[in-house]
Length: 89
Image (cartoon, rainbow, N blue to C red; front, side, top):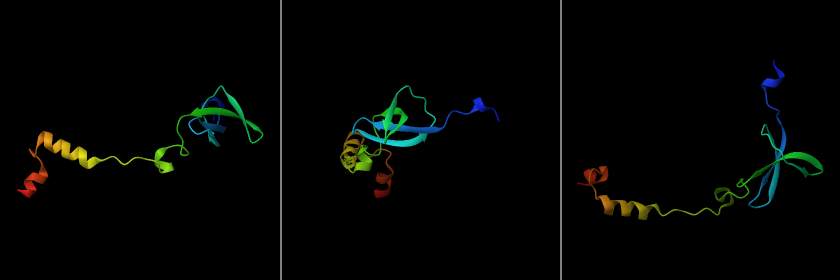
């Protein structure tokens, strides 16, 4: 097997900038920056969102009012071609 055919798979620190959370995982991503984490130097990848800051995983997500959108659509277009109008009628 050719040595140059595969990227280097190594441990990398991902830094979530929105909540200053860092974690180590393995990746083939190329980076220019390095950081020290738990007394060891790793390549650094800066990210905006991780499971630590994403609203879905933190429980801070907003519920969208879809009923209001449906009613607005029905007011605008009526029940023309609607399967529910055919079933109701």
